[in-house]
Length: 226
Image 1 (spheres, one colour):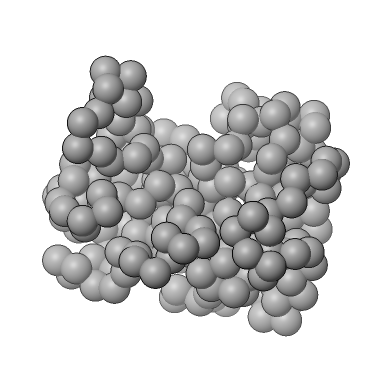
Image 2 (spheres, one colour):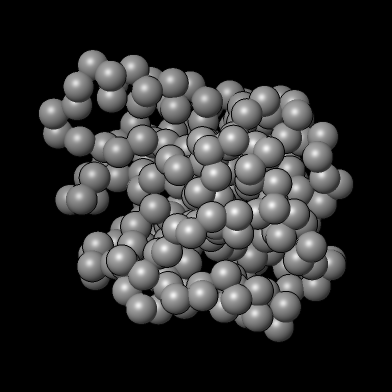
């Protein structure tokens, strides 16, 4: 039994939404993901998927993409990305599948780890009032997720985010302060593609391991994190 991670599946089984604007390596990327997944992941494993699951706008349109993930082996824990417009009621989402769980103000466990998280938001120097409002909400959601785990006597935490938890200069943020406050051990995130992958926030910083899991960064191959 092992814990894996991947993000930015960008599935579009119901529509034509090519991703090769980020490079030819995205051509038929869903087939690459499936092939690699089946090679290494068993039904006893767990996979964290940190956002941008489907291009669909509504849940009924996105069911084919969700069912595609459901048919792959292993338990899946999923957090929201900026393109996941299909994401609706968390209660409804968590009633759809036995093997797929969705994070929003809650947590799930992998052995003695609590898997927590939220979507996050771009960290800018000059944020608009709109950005500040969303950022505040995301910070609250992250704390709610961690507090729920803490309330249930967990003290080992892995956080899933979609957006990078720092700006492009890798400066401390409200998110990284929270990670340190709660003693988070690992943070996985995605969102970054193409040329931006030349400069990524990765590795162990302040005793927290940061892991970028964007599909094209990990060659469409889920990576083992525990």
